Length: 233
Picture 1 (cartoon, rainbow, N blue to C red):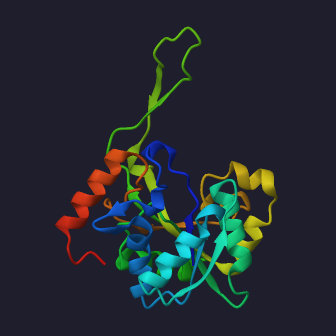
Picture 2 (picture 1 turned 180 degrees about the vertical axis):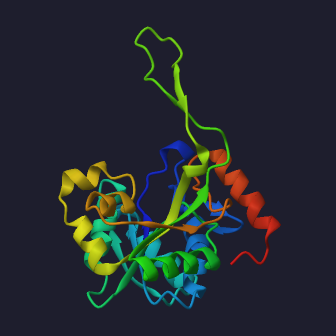
């Protein structure tokens, strides 16, 4: 599996990049790796980190004794390029590959294994949760600064919020990422590249707490959730 830890975390503020900020007393990247280390379904982990953080990342892996981490590679200029670099490092013998964002440190073993099980049945699957709020589609904001106008209310019964991990048959994910740099740059997640090939991607039930830590307030929420679930992983 590939853990993407190359984000700059500019919206978090501060000098320390997001994967290395503390969450419940340990770096966020460590919290993210823990359930994958403990899951029996995971054989090997490759981390795609920023080039300037490779030494820091290696030290964390040694310090916290992650035995499943098989390699640490330099990420690219975007998330998709980081995954692409990780794919090149993953063993050619791997039959299934998961991709997970280091900024989702509250993922559980149950979510990991549900997603992989769904991928094994269908070839490709992503963790997701049903959308709860009412979602409205709006027109683009007017140039004069007027508030956007609502076009329609979407049927939330058909809407899902996509998370990671995302799991795929290895050969399928490799072909999806061979599409070229431009297509990779436009991709918002791994599943969208598989969808581009007209291949079906199925949904596995994620968790409402498997949030992505993007802003300082997300980190506060993640801390609270972690301490409310002391046997988290």
